[in-house]
Length: 199
Image 1 (cartoon, rainbow, N blue to C red):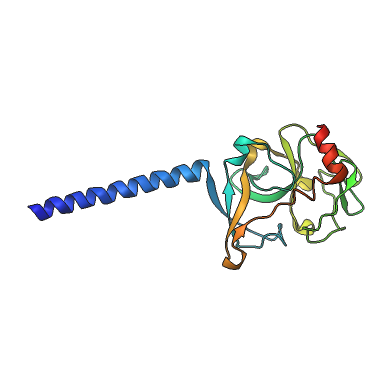
Image 2 (image 1 turned 90 degrees about the horizontal axis):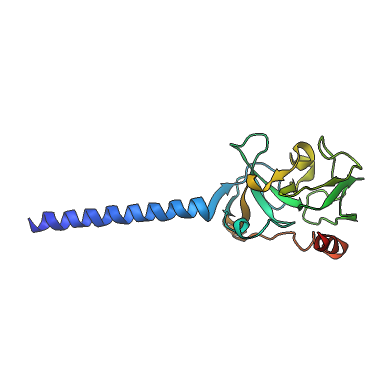
């Protein structure tokens, strides 16, 4: 009898531990962090196919997304699919593609983090030499592998509501383990910074 009572108490403790653990995991997954797998080559050389990252889902509840952030968002073409791209333009920014370069608020960007500097192509949405002003609650995103990325140049802007969160940590493969860098400094320097502060 004593053995059965202790066994029953052990089983109850075990079930309670499992339930509490699952509840904590569900809360973290829903409100704090979400794992994602990089699928494709659109973010090379920053990310490679089959890498695993954690997405911070809390930050953008506290502040607006920033230029240079790498974000995960629902595809404007299919809400069931998540994309990963870099924010190049925030609300109030004016952007243009001309001669293989991106111009942000009148300044040509020196994007050292992209795969093919000087070879940025326009698309159906962002046409060569035509300026585009980003409206409120919208963001212009591009892949770092500009010659092989379906992004805002082709299908338009991303709404803040469509953003899942900020990619902030890579946990696989092990050699690349660590906090992810942003291109915030490169996208807010000099006259670009001045233009941003006026908005």
